[in-house]
Image (cartoon, rainbow, N blue to C red; front, side, top):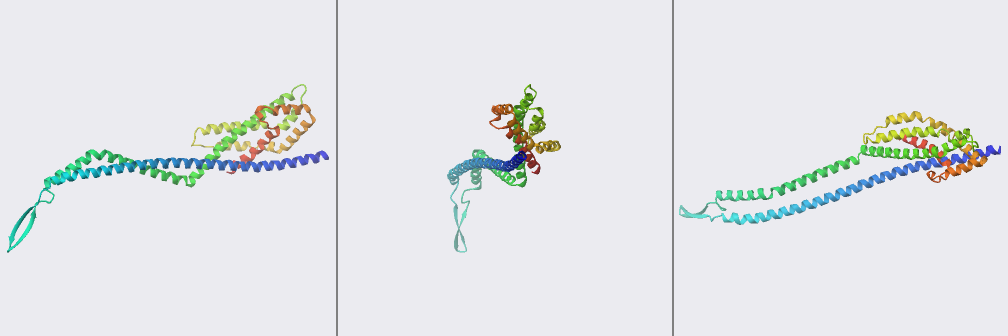
Length: 325
């Protein structure tokens, strides 16, 4: 009765710890999502600052070019004024008598004859066309480019604020997070299988086994099957990422969803697995010594076997979260 009572207390404590870990996992996922959004916004702000600085530089260059053109135009007008005045002539004044009263009238053009006017006009147009047309075209091209870039910037800003862009950002963040999580989870499961499961299986087949095969199977359950499933899923994700951004993942999830039934056995027997592990450590000093030696490996990073056995439990919560999204 005391043993059953102790086992019940251990199960209750483990369930409480598991609930805490699950809630912490949700908070960790939310934190990572917010950090990725923050990084994305920082990148947008930096790109906008760079574009603003470039546009400011271009505007300053265009303004300086316009000032130069205005100054040259004013100088050209000043040069043309003496030329125009040299072709002017004094108006002829004639006096006529009409009914005993005199009247004056002016004959001729005030600024010269029509022939001289055409010479001045053609002279001015010829100078502007030959000397300034290239600069005018350059300024026009700069202005057209600036207007196009400004319009394109407005289009991009409108798209960034659109619901479609927001959904695409969520999708991209989810996909990248999924790939990173799968890589990390597969790595941890490989450590569990290679550093713990296989050495214990070999030890169970020795002449003086620290534990039997039944205990090993009860502790590790179907960890190898879970690892194999996620290795296939990870390879599929990586192969699909090569076709980015045209990414189709529906068939991968269709393949993964029926296979998640293997987690039922793991989750159902997880408490019993930890119970068998505790009993083996208490009843078999050789098992405990071997476990300590395996946990001290560099690949384990100072983590215990119980920690590695808990990773699939967290992955079940994460996969459920992915499907709910």
